[in-house]
Image (cartoon, rainbow, N blue to C red):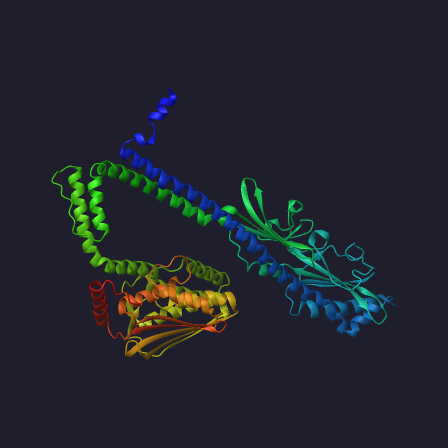
Length: 623
């Protein structure tokens, strides 16, 4: 009996409306759900993999920077060889009286203070020179645990046969500085090359601020942790200062010491990246939760799920309604649609009834009439939609720019740079007022130039000497007008790609009147030059094709430049727009050309003329 019921439930036995609903679910909702889940899983996995490949290389660079700084410290003990007086004192083994011994101790301590403490080495907090029976010392703060005879200073044998420096970590020492200041101890055997014997051992106590400055340049979101530890797991530096001096008990369980792996702390998976210094035997580690890496992805996933469910419900309801209304007139409607498919829009679905068939017929006839009307208006509507999208884009300030600017202001406040803070807040306020307080598409050139100058000033506050600029306004900016927000996207590109490849970016902005070959008259020309890495010829060709295409740009590359070009073409015609010239390795120049607009009224007339032109000639897609 069960098999008989199953046989009766065969798909071909269902009603047409039921078949349509089941088909809709099987062909749309289910596949899209599966595809979305697989895509999300693969995308999340690729984010973790890419981060796991990128971060060890970043840590390696940080390790190299720290090692380079340590090499500089390791060369400092050799300065003692430049003083023959100090060498002579260190050679002494016996003293006739205590006064002579104290005098020599004063001379050596004074030399250590002048050379290492009061010199150009703010990272050195203490220097010690230990001989078998003497200890000379000079420090910036009080200390304890360095009496002669203790195991750290009782070194009568060479530390290294080649005289190389050796690094000691805090857990290996009894030495303690005031306020528990964390440090590293660099020790080096000093040799009397004339007599071929040891003069003693020099110890340099180095504060960890230089490590913090190097690691502080790495990407380190709030959800991430970064620390430096020795081979036994003793933590020398940690972004959470309360963990300095502790240990990482999991170090012995790490599968690699140069690479990335996934770890589980409790129920939270984390991506751990490590890099080991072979020279100084420390390990730099970076740990971030997988949830933090994919936080934005998870947000879009949740939004997408909600939107998908809403649309699935709506479309399911519509599918039911449509299935119930199309089952009977389907053949007739199909016949008429073949004519429509061939381009015949003069068909008419006759139906005098007031039931669903009549409603469908009237809707079909209304649709055909609307299509005829939309064919004439489609291009004009498309332009207006694109213009609305572009306007929405141009009125937004990049959230990252606001975040970075506020962070820069916060740092200036902490450093009590009152005038700088006031200036930055003033500039930021002016930029917001310009972005949000003016709904006009056309503004005075001097206002547009002032806005990009404010943007560059904020970038210079952030990057310091790495950003420099020059702006030359060679026209009457108070009288002439320009579309709004055409300079900032170009300047943003110059800074973004320039700072990725060169140490310092210089941007030159010039506004001039020049004769236009395409327009046959004087035009306003904006030239934005930079000294960045330039663009390879094949990439430049692709960028120019993207800028001049009619399709919308997906992704990040070329969006700003295309928006500027498309807006100018829509407003003024194909003889105006944006041009990019670049030499790979030699910088880039972006040229923006617009007509001379001497008043807002003339600009409005020009815009209206352009709109009428597009409405009358929908197939004319200039630019």
